[in-house]
Amino acid sequence: MSNTRTSDYPIDRQFLDRWSPRAFSDRPVTEEQVLTVLEAARWAPSASNLQPWRFFYGLRGEPEFDTLLSLLVPFNEGWARNAGALIFITSVISFDGSRQNITHSFDTGSAFMSLSLQAHSMGLVAHGMAGIEFEKVPVVLRLPSDLKVEAAVAVGYQGDVSTLPEALQKREVPSQRQPLTDMVFKGHFTGEIKAPS
Image (tube, rainbow, N blue to C red; front, side, top):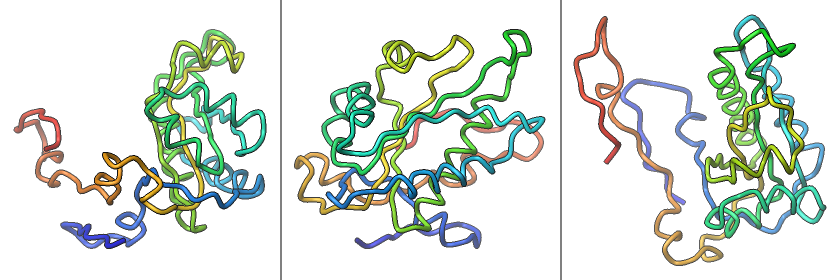
């Protein structure tokens, strides 16, 4: 697949080559591979070194995978069932029931990016998803009240686009980004908030 992404300023190629396909091959992912991408996530930066991320995973063909798959919205369940592994990401919103962690989502997002780049370096793809059953996840995964559900991730080897429904096949290309000038401001806000076109 041709990747036509370009940056306005010179950056490491990994940031342009990493993307989030939905077509997965049936090639299995090993537990060691999943734990390796989670090891990379473990080393992400966090405020006060609190490391608020908590991960739940399952490998395709095992009961834990089916449980996690059932927690995706139907649209995502349709294509993510072919991934080699599913990971659910949560963050700690408070420690000991009192110490609030206001940067829990910010820090956990950095852990996801570390996971994603590690997967890419291993020849895997990682597709993050917010399309999950947010009300069901805490019940099914038996989460304590101080864990917030953030997202899910499908991990595996990229597959043939023809395995996707026709509508998704057209979207199976590396996405572009808004210009840097739309999101960076020197000193104070001067733009407008608008969705990417």
